[in-house]
Amino acid sequence: MKEFDKNEGEYEDFGSEPQSRVIVVPGEVVSSEEDFLPGEGARREGKDIVASRYGLAEKVGRVIKIIPFSGAFIPRRNNVIIGRVSDIVHSGWIVDIDYAQNGFLPLMESPRFVNKGEMDQFLAIGDVVAAKVWSVSPKGIDLAMKGKGLGKLEGGFIFRVNPSRVPRIIGREGSMINLIKVNTGCNITIGQNGWIWVKGNSLDSELKARKAIEFIADKVLVTGLTEKTEKWFGENK
Amino acid sequence: MVVKRLDGRKADEMRPITAKVGIIPNADGSAMFTFGNTVAIAAVYGPRMLHPQHMQDPKGAVLRVNYDLLSFSVLDRKKPGPSRRSQEISKVTEWALSPALDLKEFPNTVVDVQIYILQANASTRVAGINAASMALAQAGIPMKNLVCGVSVGKLDKDLVIDVNDTEEHFEEGEGATDFATAKLANTDEYTLLQLDGKIQPNLIPQALALADKACAKIYEVQKKALKNVAEGDEK
Image 1 (tube, chains in turn purple, cyan):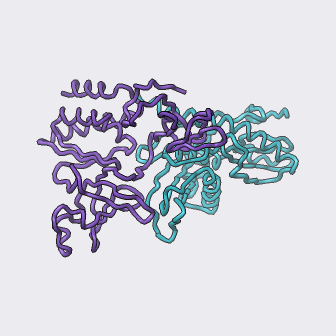
Image 2 (tube, one colour):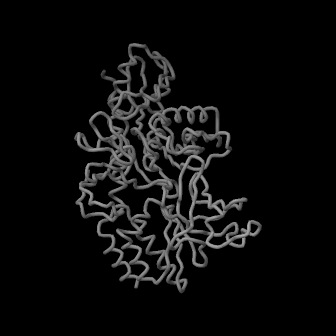
Image 3 (cartoon, helix red, strand yellow):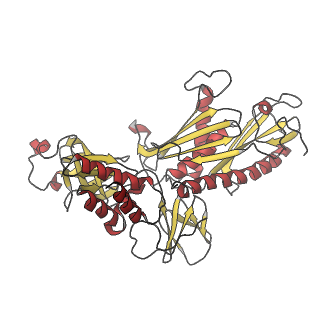
């Protein structure tokens, strides 16, 4: 079992700095100390904190949570996602978001007035949108489209990576994605569902951005990934 | 118990076991598990949309397992496609795995598990369960624990662990016996007990004690494989 230094790793910003990181498998006891609380992906069994998922166990303050390595995308409120319109219904659009349920984008979310009879003037079946998860309930997933960078995506192309790699591609406070944007001059939107939209001035720069993202997505546990990506850009000018 | 087995193993000695995680890039989770010449691979997809809709369960995701022996896995070519045997094993595998899973979070969805036997030399169902449990963990499905399975055999009056093909068909003495077991790792919760043949009731505790010891070893191999995929992919 490998212990990680608190400054290692390229994961999401968790507010306070994590104290330690350990790889765990489901059913493994993470800590037997009384004063910890189970967070996401962990549970309490007697006095032990036990992992429920496979991933990296992280102690932040008194809470132990598990960051999964892999697996399908599970939508949470406020996730930015990229999806494809799969149907138009009377009060909005049905969006395929690469999850077991479709997302629903209400008509009201359109930034300008859309006539109910001509909804495909704004978003037609097959169009790609960037949206935010507004709510997740057993009845369905509601989407919102009001906000910076959200809306219909035109031009460029989309491709997919494993959703669990998304936090790393974004980097701490967006450091990694900014590095790619600066080096390629591309406009990039990353959906938490692993769909990535790239649009640049030329196809070459777009392909380079995609290669850089796939380079990062290939690595699972790499420390100092930002430096490695800088080096990669140096080698691939 | 001093039994001399055909391949020179001790009664409580398994065939060499290996495990590998993340072998199928397009799956959400995947793994391979081998007992000597028995090779099983498993792929997990989901949680994803379940059709037809009437099969959906609002209380949580449905687990759907498909076990299949590939046509080239046995000595005489097996006719491809589902059979009475593969349907039964798919179902018992489903029952063996589902107590370990916590699928409440994903209502109206399905988790698909595909198990393929690339090479069969007895104990295929438990090899499949071992592979599937690692694949489910890699797919990020919430689990109570990993599931470990092993088969116990009986050569005349002597119990042996992890039967191979010849031992499975050892008809001398009391007849061929194959006792497939699976349990949640580090617990006494058995999720699969499937007996094919005859065994005295007083031998069952002994058989389970043998299985217990073997499962502890299998668990260590599974755990190591999962931890390696996380640490070892940067070369």
